[in-house]
Length: 107
Image (cartoon, rainbow, N blue to C red; front, top):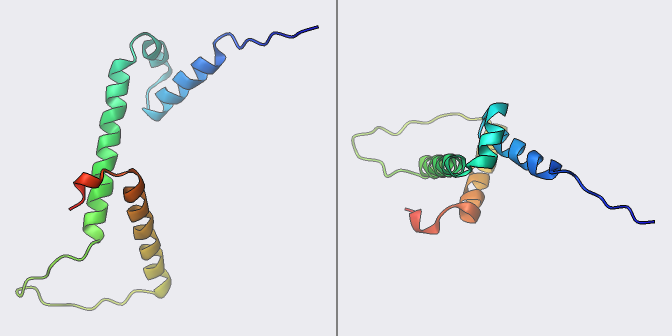
């Protein structure tokens, strides 16, 4: 005896539901995603672009900026554990940008 498995479109609905959740849409949009996915893909593309910009800005903020002579150098005491945590965060940012960021945007 052979059993024929069929999910009746369940996998597709789960994918649409996950996509709607990632775009922070409510359940009413699930049918629209199925009927016309292009606006939702454009919204996802815009969100990815904004996240890429934020990643680039975070890396730029973490790099040492050239200091002008008008700025007086100051010292700041930071706990060693906090400094290590910040270094790890910056390393994660650099690794993520190297893996997923656009190499032509590096300045």
